[in-house]
Each structure stands twice: as structure tokens, then as C-alpha cells.
Image (cartoon, rainbow, N blue to C red; front, side, top):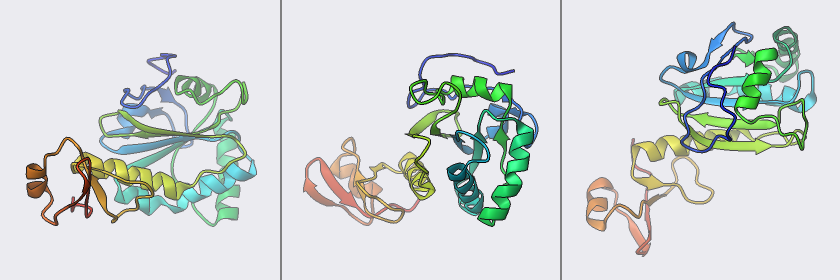
Length: 219
């Protein structure tokens, strides 16, 4: 059974609701399973469908990238766990990968989907949309993305968002438009010039008093 079944919409910095749910890796007690890792929690509409097959394969192939970032991945659809396991064989075959992360399923998964707002009635009363939740080691929701069923997600972008969140947690910077890992960053407006000189030994360039550019800090 799920726990903490609140129905209010989740927002950034909310505590990610805890739950218990069956999965392809056995019962998942979410907060315990997440432990001190980041979690990328994503839903897909239905098993044995083409876009979802490519997505779950891509997530599997990016396993080393999640590990580098101390991140666990967790998938969900409202289909059953046994269907997930059968479908995984197709994913492994067609996408040349090994799906080794848990996929939540079964009646409890529908409760979890409602808990996280993954079912959008104007899209479908039954199937989950393509939601992504970035959850930090303190179990806080840090970012969210939502795509409609026909549109496959870009998991390079999802890695980019994860990199940006982790960087801004460790350094007094924001990431500008189209930022990629290793690129220049923006000094936070809350940091004075005097403090910025101490925090950023590589220096910074002032374009406007509120717009200061610095090389990505070492973290």
C-alpha cells in the first residue's frame, strides 16, 4: 500500500511523497530505497509501446552516467510487474541494453501515479503522461518535466538538468541559457563583488551589475 496519500499538486522543494509499491526488483519502500542518492523518477504511458521502448532503453544505456552523479533511476507505468518483465526482454533486444533499474507496476503504481500527478485526465484517465521528477538526497523535489505521450524525452537534457542542480547546490552560481557541463556560469546576485573575488579564484566578468560571468567552479 502507498503512504502519505496527499492529493495536492507537487511543487518544487516539496517533500517527495513516500510510498510502498511492487516493482520488477521487488517491493520498493521509496524513501528507504532512495537513501542518500539523487533520484530521477519517471513515468511512461504503457508497456509494449514504441516510444517507451526507446526511452527505457536509453535510460539503461546511461547507467554509468547516473552512477557518476550519485543518482538512481526509477520508472513507473500502471501496467503489471509481470508485463514489465516480459517487455524488458523486448527492450534489451531492440535497444541493445540491459534494463537493470526498477519499474513500478500494478494497482499500487496507479496510486503512486495519482500521488505524483502523473495521470492527466485531459490526456488520459488511465495512462500516465511522461513525467520526470528530480529528487535530491533530502527527498525534496527539485525540478519537474512533463511531456505528452507521443513525444519522447531527451535524456541528455535530463542529465544536463541534474548536472545544473548538483552544481548550484555546491557553488554560488546559476546556469545560463543553453548551459552545458564545463561552460561558464552566472554569479548569484546575492553574492557581493567582494565575496565573489574570494569564491571564484578564476575571476568573473561584469556585463551588468546583476550579470556577472565566471568559469564553472571546481566542485
